[in-house]
Image (cartoon, rainbow, N blue to C red; front, side, top):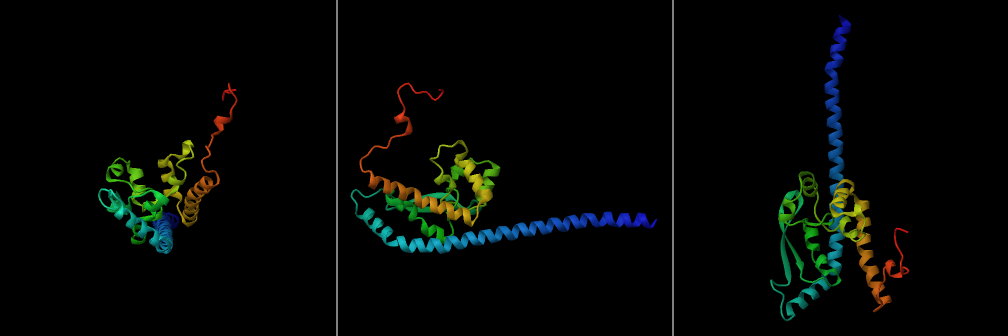
Length: 222
């Protein structure tokens, strides 16, 4: 009789222990997520503010040049677009109407400081693009702030089949962290800098692909 009561008591305690373990695991997961968000937001505020201060003179000159240019750009010096941000909330994205020296991206730094954007994240989608996402992809996008740059942007020209933007955005959503963000930021600076230095070093020289050096009659099948 006593054995039966002890067995029943153990069985009664087992669900409670499982629930406590699940609650502890969920609390740990939430704590880690909050810590990651805090670290990411701190990086955005510190580095974003520093970059905004450094680039403010160039952005002001670019805005002045666009204002004085004839014919003046339609819609003013700023391009205004509705994009979807954190939690699926829409916001008005403002950027300079120029692609020179990546000033259009740098002009979005106030959005980073304000919290609409992150330095690193998936590209900001339009409402129509967001509506086309499936439930899983939409949930991942809403859980992250869109970024000035991201994994898909720095790997977009690799040509590898696994470097499709959707796959890269999903990979970033699952593995994002301060280390990955810093690596993406470094790559975002390295790529245009390397291209600019290459143009200065080889002015007017055509860039040949490896297919241009193959002998006549060469076949990949061989």
